[in-house]
Image (cartoon, rainbow, N blue to C red):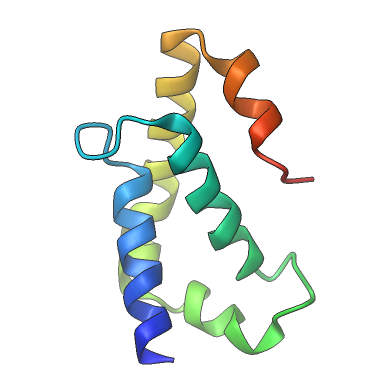
Length: 88
């Protein structure tokens, strides 16, 4: 679980890091992985607390998601990126 916590930290930080990861497709895939750990996904209930109780996630996740959304909309790539993101 500790290794998964480090992966969650890395993904949460990189989702909002336009300067570190410029590829919006890769950042969208990171969001998909984080979604798989969310309470909305019933397949992995044992990891819900990992995502919801994670200090980095609580402080940066919303900001990172908004940053990704703005980056996609600003660059006009929404038609190219959104089909790759398979969130419901």
